[in-house]
Length: 398
Ligand code: ADP
Ligand code: MG
Image (tube, rainbow, N blue to C red):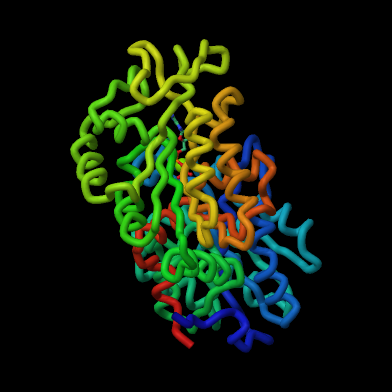
């Protein structure tokens, strides 16, 4: 696949509308983490330096359009104004904010743009039609600009007016962030150097069925930890006490076990606790000795060693889903050790997909120790499922 990228566009003097992912956590008007804004800077700065007139749009949180009271509260909470203020601090040019997603104020602000200036419009989800990929709305946004660039990797799995619709009406290209995501994820999922080991964890089997299915097809080994391992352990006929389980997925887990043979590797021991709490009583037990009143909240030390061994020599590793309840310190060891083992593999291509796994790796201090940590939780999951992402598919080929 060779999609157009921002480098292939002649942007000088052109109005370029860019879909960015500025969906940052905001509490009481303050941005808690500006990483998503920072990640969009290479594309924004490139456009500014090359004399484009830059129009930025993004969603921020959710807006309930069914209930008028909720709608008003959501709009107040998810106002893009603080993002504009932070962006202005991060770039070397004029940033104006327009508290509109359609209308005269926006049109005037766009008309006034000089080369290298930026205008950021209000939250795209203030528009009811956005999430429905409303064509009129997409046409309107397209009418503001000459070119469209998508740099919102976290949103390309959604076919909305701002991610897909607008690209139907303008010449389009990938921004640098999306380009890098596509390059790294494609290399891992579609063109892996072998051995290729996938490590899957997290809470639920049901969230990851398609990922497990696809990775069982393409990886050499699939290691499973985290909460979802217990549905598999139970499928093997073992007791799992009060561990997380999805009863309605046990048959599916049995099917996976049957087709995968020794490709699928499950934990052999567990750190179990008598409560879902940091202060719980804990112990390590083998996988066939989980007491009835305990729950597995992390993989055990033997499993850590087993997973480390399976990782030896791997040339490609995809990791999705924490190995335990890493948010609580007593149950973070498995995730930490797996993270460490992956990051120390010599010469391997190592990719993290999934919101919580990426957060875990960053929180545990591994931000720069992987080949790639995806910025899109849902989008990277769908990529690993082997699905086409509509916001990328719509972009012109070179
Ligand atoms: P990702 O966002 O990386 O795809 P998930 O959303 O699937 O990951 O899962 C992350 C969550 O899984 C974390 O909040 C973590 O606490 C939880 N989790 C991991 N192991 C367990 C477990 N053994 N029991 C309960 N929850 C778990
Ligand atoms: Mg998650």
